[in-house]
Amino acid sequence: MNDIVLYGSPLSPFVRKAAALLEEKGVGYDIEAVDVFNPPEWFVAISPLKRIPVLRDRSIAAEGVDGTIPDSSALCAYIERKHPEPACFGDSPFAHGRALWIEEFADTTLAAAGGLGIFRPLAFPAMQGKPPEVDKAHKTWAEDLPRHYDYLEAELAGRDWLAGASFSIADIAVAVQLMQITLVAEVDFAARWPGLAAHLERCLARGTFDAVYAKAEKFVRRALPERVAL
Image (cartoon, rainbow, N blue to C red; front, top):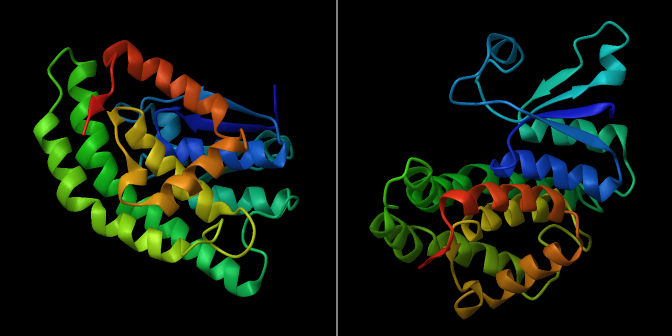
């Protein structure tokens, strides 16, 4: 049993964001499943907004403190402070600020557009034995997401990483949102956003996303055997 436990589901890009940061730092962790749609009372007590993930540091809890932190951004900041090497929140004060901004952009704008517009319409009906809402996903891919990806393509501007010269929470946050789409859809990022596609490949090559993404993919494939071409 590891000191760090994440409550949530590998299907959540926010759980995978926290897991990737822990993997990057070589910190062991456990994931304990919580049904966010019908959370138990003990979970609501530590996550008033009923969102996942929540982190529990068992080493802190052993000292008689609750040891829990809700919200992926808050708990990732805690992970960075407790395990500062390798640094993942920017290699300069300016890069740190930019990393926080890109993380926020990914967690809000990208998550809402891709999650509500592609992942849910394709995955949720399939999990209920119904046909996926392909038209909605097509519309999101064609009309809603391009301007957000255009912004990220411009931000990269030929650079390897989104905030400074090193891999950071900004890159993790964006990658997990793009991967939320690739869980359910066959898409070609490179056709319009070659820089963003190359960025995703660099992120995946690190190996820190592999374990939890594999669990999410295994779950999705049971309901949606083939990705939907968009």
